[in-house]
Each structure stands twice: as C-alpha cells, then as structure tokens.
Image 1 (spheres, rainbow, N blue to C red):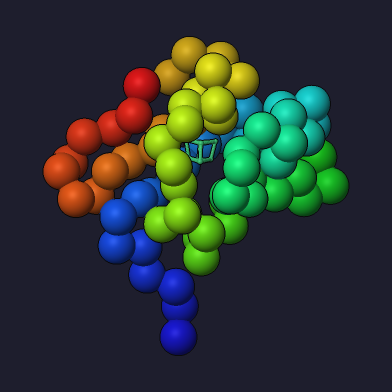
Image 2 (image 1 turned 45 degrees about the vertical axis):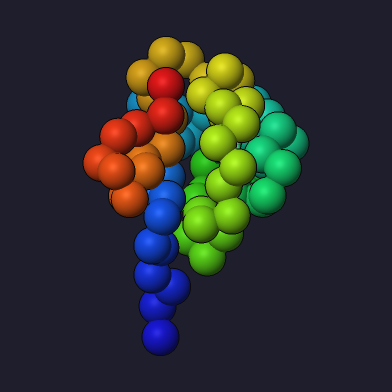
Length: 79
Ligand code: SF4
C-alpha cells in the first residue's frame, strides 16, 4: 500500500529538482530524512514526511519559494 501522509506534504519545484548541490544540502539539513540525494536529484521520501518537525532548515537552505512544506491539517504552508 502506498504511504499516505496525514499531516505534512513536501514538494520541491522543478527548477531545483536537478540541482546536485541543493540535493546534497537538503539531505544533510533535514533531521528526519525527508530529502534524499538521488544521484544529484532531489527526491522526497514520502513515508518520512509526517515526521517533519517544522524546523524550516530546508526552506532556509533553498532559494525563496522553491521548497514547500504543507501542513495538511490546517491548510497552511511553512515559510
Ligand atoms: S522543516 Fe525541517 S523537518 Fe521538515 S522537511 Fe524541512 S528540514 Fe525536514
């Protein structure tokens, strides 16, 4: 069965998906391993998304507006 996130959904814009430096950086900063550096491409580990601690490290590490951490429980987005 596919993982279903109940609380958090994470998305990255296509403009940064193939940014190898950022893929490595995101994998490094996220404390709960939501980002994976898949050979220079940013991959989201869906089954870890609900573990997000809302630390904003991924957002601070990325160009403005390119990483989206969506709180499914209240409809807002981390910024
Ligand atoms: S806010 Fe923190 S825990 Fe959540 S995805 Fe970003 S780096 Fe990971």
